[in-house]
Length: 378
Ligand SMILES: [Zn+2]
Image 1 (cartoon, helix red, strand yellow):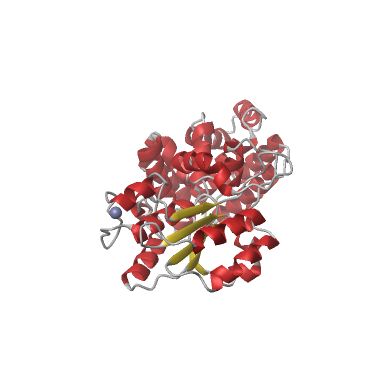
Image 2 (image 1 turned 60 degrees about the horizontal axis):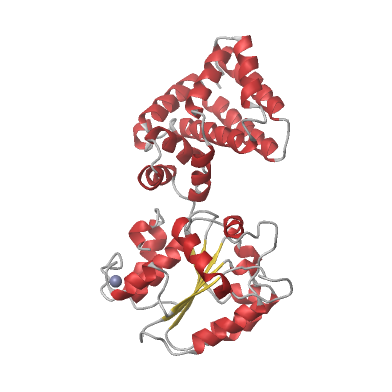
């Protein structure tokens, strides 16, 4: 993995490159990410950069022996630790037991999370963790000499799954063997043992921008620009969520949104009843209902911004920009704020298994009040 293959995260990349340039590489780091934002890809790119024989100022070369070994996750000085489950009841597993599955997982789904990983190793209903045996293994591996004479690197994915046994790593984190780098990647940093977390230098990752997600879906996942734009706005900054939506989405949500608003504005009661029936049905599913509401919410927020930022500066695809433009003219600032609250609330209810038809019905009534009553001029 190269920096150029990691979606966005420009600030974190620059921070890392500066550390390398100034030769001030911390020996124990925590990559902290909101789920699905690229913590593991960034850690892999960072390890590749550090080991590369001919790095440029911005990226590893991708061609030297070290880069090639890293690309296959087969570098002898790079060790991986991640949560696992026992192969046999009662046995204490180590991460290396699952190395083949891990390489495959990282290859196809580097933005995945714990749930995806447990699926990959057919352990869906079990609780994975990083075991005491794995901690002993880490200490043993890192006390060996480096094979290639450079850094020895540990990439530990999800330290939140290290229980008290994680304290076995403390000494190594405090007084690491020479030329050792420890890279932790966490999606729930508040759950990491305090003794460990306080000894790590944090690199924060941020939710991905909608346009970065849209671009990645088009170039990496072959999505149509139209669908990619909708998902970019609905994925909450997570590329993992975006891929899931891409897989599950068979409805053109923008068209659906337009139909809804048109039917409300024209007071077409029969059309509305049918719309609520279909959109709120269990066949549509909660994930898609949430997607739709999130997409609409993002457009409403863009329409709010349009009151002080010109729409053309918003990096929106043409069809969405036109929609945002209309929305910002149709509804006052106050109405848009209220609508944003209502959509947030609707998402909250859908997440908690409320009756989706009732949720969409209530939203329809709110929208009717806004769209066909005199414009609020406050
Ligand atoms: Zn290289």
